[in-house]
View 1 (cartoon, helix red, strand yellow):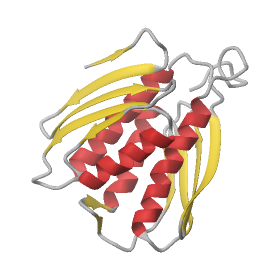
View 2 (cartoon, one colour):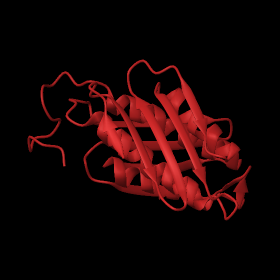
View 3 (cartoon, rainbow, N blue to C red):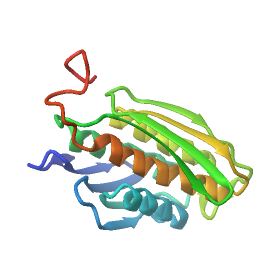
View 4 (tube, rainbow, N blue to C red):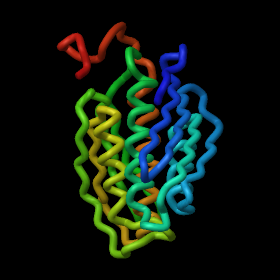
Length: 200
């Protein structure tokens, strides 16, 4: 179940399956609050970084089958957050494109995105550990893939440098938040940011 607010830049989405129950409350304008609880401490930390550096009001609550593993929780949060992003920005005239290099100590990560209506993930990040905290590193690309597909975002995340897995992962989440904020900022143009007259 989902509902968009009367504000075009806010959305609430609930997504319930036999594996997870996810609730996302997302606001793009003057975001100052993050309230995150997924049952996975490191994932909570990454989502908080995404929301804080993206200047989003971001609430995420997930009750998932983490006794099995973390995959369903991470993937389903990505799906639900992607749906919320798409709903919140539907009909808005936005800048659409953004790219940024984010350094974090030894790590340097490039994030580039296009809020195009076409979901795609270009992922060139390698980790040398199976887990960071309680988060499986193989699930990180699954999160961004699910989010990009359901948000309708063309998203590229590339590691330029870095050895510390925590730093690389955190730079990716921060970079996505910053780039999303940049691309979603209001455009001076009126109407869709596309020569086709429609973003799809």
